[in-house]
Amino acid sequence: MNTSDSPVAVIGAGPIGLITALGLVAHGVPVVVFEAGDELSADTRAGTILTRTLEVLDRYDALGPVLEASLRLDEIGEVDRATGKSTGSVLTSALAGETRFPFVVNVPQHELEPVLASMLAPGTVRMGHRLVDFAQHENGVTLQLSTPDGIVGFEAAYVLGCDGGRSTVRERLGAEVTGHTLEQRYMLVDLVCDLDIAHPRDYPYLAYFGDREEWMVLVRQPHCWRFVFPLAPGRDEPGPDELRNKARHFIGDVDSLEVLGSNVYTVHHRVASSWRDGRVFLLGDAAHLITPMWALGLNTGVLDASNLPWRLAWVLRGWASEALLDGYEAEQKPVAVHGSGALAEAARAVMDRRSDSVAGWQDAMTRTLLGVRLGADWSMTRTGPLRVGDRAPDLRVFGLRGPVHLHELCRDSFVALHLTDARRRPFIPADGPAGLRQVVVSRWDAPHSDLRSHAYFDPGDTVRERFGDVVVLLRPDGHIAHIEPWTAHSWQSVQDRYLQEVRLAG
Image (cartoon, rainbow, N blue to C red; front, top):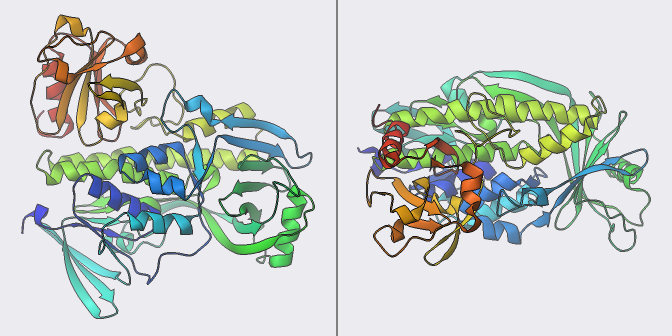
């Protein structure tokens, strides 16, 4: 059987599994999602989607319905619990020069999952299919699944384990999980109360109440307020009356507090030793369990779902060798270990008042929204000029029919941007290796010639001023694959670099 004859199997219909499936569909890869449960999760869980995740959803043609179900916000605030006064805010409008989405959104996970699932074709998500085992062979993976009708087999090109912290896929791979689990647990409760009219508080829609003795995160959801606070080791789960009293301790007295739902969860910083074995991969919580402080749980998993689908598409189309898939773990594991994990530890220190670096908190939080660099030295903080591994700023240029943004140009292609003078008619090949486009970006509109269909207008030199006089190669996930000073022969060097990137040469 040829690999391309079989769909990719995604195990788990949580947010990461569903977003990964949407990414595969966006790249034209057939996919089937297998979920052990009979219904999507109804648990009270993750609720904030950061800017970088919004960009990924947009690239996968899934953003509109998610925004309809969500509450948008442009301020993330910190409040001193003892005084009730603001100690600083992150205003996401600071990102307006970086992205088309300078905001974050709040939506409960149990409301997000049905929205994501509804965007997949009927029959793509198969409920009540629990993975039992799998066996790899030369051209694919044979799955055994337990269903209401008994054990069934399924042939997949690849298997993507998005089945959470207790991943069956990870267990069958024999991957070890290292790290630590906090004795402290977190309590999450959804409450209906009027903080707008009868008892206006004017809190930011995402507010962190820091305190050395007791902290709390307040999240405004579309239909309620969500409270998150720590539970001491061994502490029993609070009942409804205690939860209401706890909320009043932070927000003051209100007429009515209705408990909609609650959940207690354990806080981890644990990472799988290996994220790939042949045709089987781990994503999301199956690969890394990161505390959800600063929304680093679900949103870190979405970075996995951004990195892997395009790689699989290139391999399945025959545009890249299997070696391209090695880059997934090499890039994303540092994100979990040195990026999200380190920031989660910093977040707890700030909330516990073990660290008073408000300026550092604001900078880290702002950069967390985008996740701007990949690679062995991966960092949330951007310093200096743009370089390989950075997420490219989503700047606007103009094509023949109107405005377009850089991330739109590379949605399903590598794109080489030649930042040079279009009046000089630089040579740009009309074709080349599959999966690569080359274009000129210039403040001088291209005169009518063969170049015009390969040129974009950059009024004010906005893009060139950001990147310099270079040629820059963008990947389908919006990250910079290569950058070098521009010369008349850059078209050839960037083509050679692309072939190296997809492991077809060099």
